[in-house]
Image (cartoon, rainbow, N blue to C red; front, side, top):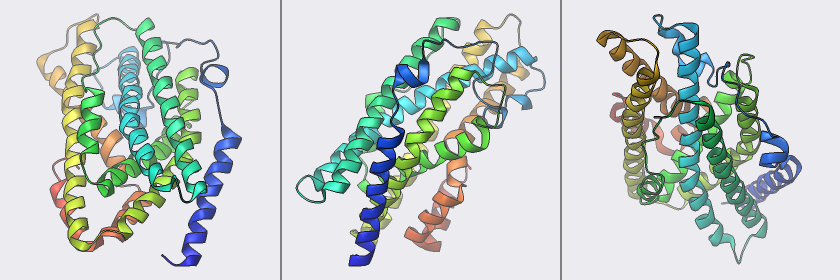
Length: 310
């Protein structure tokens, strides 16, 4: 890396530190503020939940389905931030006796991810207080983290960048725009978005740094790892989507036909694939960066391998 580019990167790390200090928030003082959820309101906006496509559901049923999806959405972030925080802590060690600006940026990133995990643990408890018993979050957080962290650093950073970019898109394009959402749930993702905005920048910098120090053969293997990670995310969704639908049907005050139940399972899985995979892969900020690192031939291979999901 040239001296000019290194200096430019250092400026970006320093800016992330400055913003992190300026926007720092507290879970109780700023986010929860003694509130509980209003279960007359939606959690997930229609653009993410896609509940409006299920025309046989009443408005109240669509609201409840959005709340189930929102509960899973929070739990999914609690899950991914376990391995993201661990990875950033690992990367920070490379700067421990070197660039202290970069060290501070990644240590702050790790600290904020730990705070986000605690926030989403609190949100799960608040959701459980007001929703009928029977909800299950299927993935085992530590098992998932171990699987992800067993892949190459390039692939883990690519997946992390993908996740933290789609959080930006979801908040700005859907959550922020919807006046019908629970105020508390909306605030959770407002404050989450504020810190994730800096994390996405650091993801890009660290991913590009890792890419610059691997050779072509290592990059091909890293792309294989990324494909496996995305397929692994899809496998989690294929467990969680039917569990959420079974919970929805099980607590409903009416019976659904077998055809309606199948529609529910299909549409919720489609919504989850959109939320956690497709919306990020199609976002130009991520797609353009990926293409710049892997080239047209490997982009075509990624598209072909992931076609059943996309």
